[in-house]
Amino acid sequence: MTVQADVHPLHIHEMMARLGIGRDAVVSPRSGLRYQTALHRCEACSAEKECKKRLDRAPAAITSAPWFCLNADILFELQYDQRGHAGSRKNRQVLLTLNTLRKRSMRR
Image (cartoon, rainbow, N blue to C red; front, side):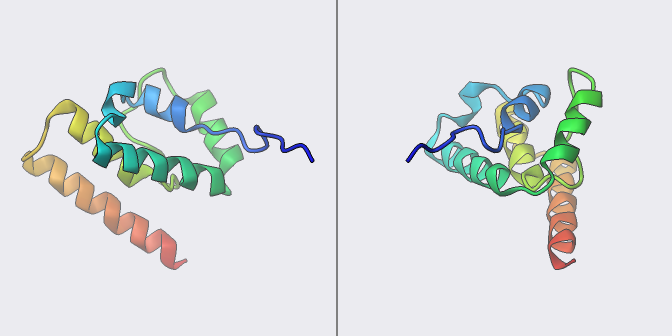
């Protein structure tokens, strides 16, 4: 039995690149676990076509993941950690907002 590896192409790598998240951002155990979680979420995501459309239309650099992205919280945390913004009041508020939006979308 042959398993096709690319049944559901992952857009997480392109999304990370456009958000400015480098490969070095996922080397610590904590960020590595976040990255693995993001990969699994992306594999299970039902918005693959919408994601692809957004990436096709988006500029080379973007500031945040689309509202429907299951990984918006993780991608924000990876950006936050990579840029060394720990302690920034504004970024904490943005993270809280993303978490609130994610919880609301999960209720639907």
